[in-house]
Image 1 (cartoon, rainbow, N blue to C red):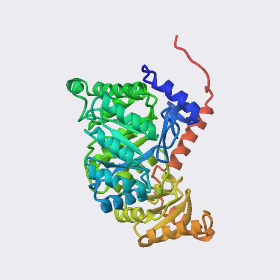
Image 2: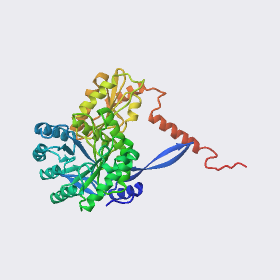
Image 3: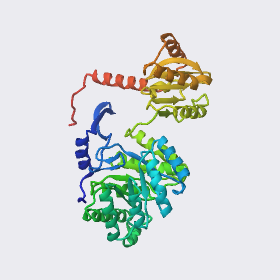
Image 4: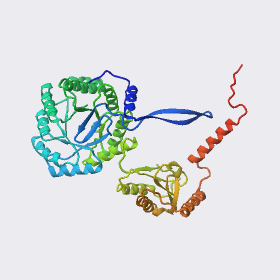
Length: 453
């Protein structure tokens, strides 16, 4: 049901109450020597759309984790190439894959793809509603329709009727580059309104056809327009939302645009499934970017999290090479451990004290630590190998850090000998603030109010 616009914060509060996703984070903020408790409302976990659909065995919306989608880059009728890519993206972490179905031979291939795919398959249909019907009969787990070119209500009615009979969901895929003809002029004047109008009109059509098993997407090449339109639509409909920046660009620019646009919406609690659209023949790259966005927002976990400092003039070893090697070797691990690589032997431990494992280096030596505590000192050229030796030891011991106290003490001594007495480490900053508060509280006029005559 299309609803009148409501306050997003109010809507999120209600959803968070239902899913248990809302919590308050408080921390002290110093202002003119006084500690003020500042509260921030954070939306973590899932703030889902109210409705839920299932694409194959993957739940979308209604409290489910954000699903990762991608699209094959192959000619769908080329079964070997298409299946190879589907298996590759599934291994990379894709939950769902979409394939283009512009011809009858693609429909024929779709039958085999659906049968053999390790993940649910969505058929992407434009222009020809009969291909949508054939894709449904071929067993597609979902069919995407473009309101801008699929045809009138009579044709859509035939598709929804068959989808209802099969219990197959549909996706309403609105795209800024192919809006319905009557909205193209509005697109030049107010592109956000044009996108939202196109989506709402099609949602209303689906509801008139008594079809509610669908999700909606509104994609634009413009990041601000994508954000604004999805914010507006999320207040008006309860159906799951699929997010993406269409034609985002290369792996570099497209990843940045997607991280900004999708990250903003997901942090708002908007979005139930995402696809990163990159100009690359390697669809698994889209999946990797999607996961990094979700991991950064703590929405899902998959594999290790790497922390690495940006480097500065204190750096005394080849950190670029070390970080690249650590990242490469972490790909062999499935557990979501946090690993830090920091270039400063003094600040490193304090800045990544929460990391499960970390290394910090200097010119001739470095240290391996866990949760802010030293494990041992090693030669700089052996940092990476010894780091992974400790990680493997951790897993072999049932996820228990194995620490030799003598080696740890030697590492602590090395750190003390190399410490920069002027460096503003987190520990020193905290100590200085605590001292300032203690001094203020010991003042003979503490707590008294003064007024000027």
